Length: 248
Image (cartoon, rainbow, N blue to C red; front, top):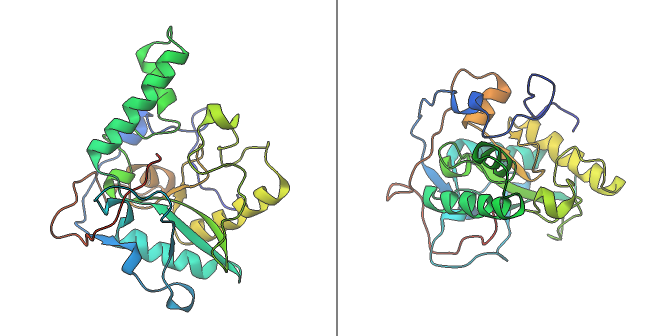
């Protein structure tokens, strides 16, 4: 990345979502609504964001929701991209119950692969790829999974498929991974420059995961508290009828 977008541990390693320092960040909920990215206008030429609909399924529209402040910053990030490139939105809000299901599902996979690991190590390892439910940025409407596309909406190569886990990708899902092509590295750099320029931070085990206003963002940016905590989508939010993503 061209700008610092991750917090580091005492020895310089990556701070995972399960780190106690993340959970220790206080939340001072600002009360912003969840809004539907599909109806937003702004960014370059006021077109709004490209939304990937390939993974939509079921009756809920939750995947397309974000806090208002996060959406504003994404639209600004699109303006910062080089001409001919666009952000491709894949997933935003995730209900807490779904986040819990995804976390336990991945933890079960790790238990099967490493049956002798202590529970605390399984929990920490699972948090590389799926955020613990009680602090998950997606469940706060603060996080977005996204990638880059060209002007015609064709997805660009960023080194792995979105939602590739560390085992599947041999670690290439890590934002700073060395085992990707020069082209994919260049694309990650462009994506990171635009998003950090708009005030978002990256979770460094997932090149596609960026957030603003959550506990991890607060720790990474030095903010005294998070702006958004996990919540259920309600009638006051901008819900509409479309599907949600099948991946993490």
